[in-house]
View 1 (tube, rainbow, N blue to C red):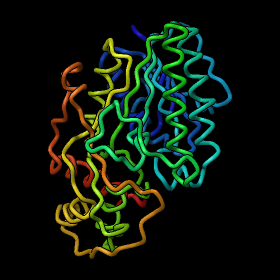
View 2: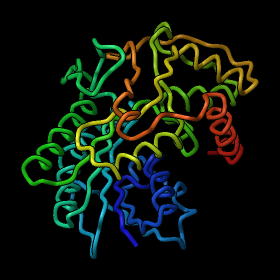
View 3: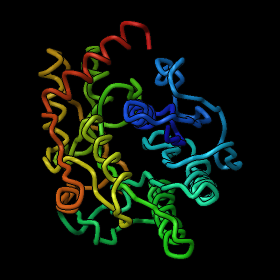
Length: 313
């Protein structure tokens, strides 16, 4: 059977990717140093075609045997994580990407990089197309993540052009769903955890800033389609339905039946004012677009969080 390596496999998206690839007949090697990942996300894969290796990919990657696909997902992704771990974030974007590309080159495998909408920074183009170069503050507090991903993209393209490696770059927009951490720090998990606990729901700034939320199953479907395509340029994968942060906070309070009130905190430095993907490329070349309605996605995510909170997570 085909064999895939996923770095960051114990994370939110990485673990769902492992599920999807195993369903497609892959044997999966998952690598994670558990800095932000959780073994519970992959516990259900015990006894299946899955091997877990606890390892920091910035220290090199060695996998015996044939490998046909390498997916590099290792990185802190929440602002609270990359602000707490700025150097590891930069290192996994640089050294980790170099090592993952080196593995793909040695195995003659396809390579997929998890990039992010954050490469667009606080965008001056709206919606954001893949051709937009971005508006990023390289020395701001978010720069450790934004520039790590921009560098990772540059290295990935360099391996494609210089070594002829079959590389793909997915620019992921805000994604939500089961297996997010209860105190992840991003809008959807924060709002759900606060609403279910009866706490104030904290909105940063006025709440008029916009985001586009894609359910995890839609995101993974797009990534798998990209991995199996002949595309090598970056591709946006996200839901183009744009909401204000206040909209999503109110929707979550209503969906949970909570009596929480919304309170406003100061807006973080360099927080993007708008975020919405142009997915014309994904539609045309991958036949992909999101299918899960916000209400359905929130219901599944809220149920997961109810169980986690009841278990004392």
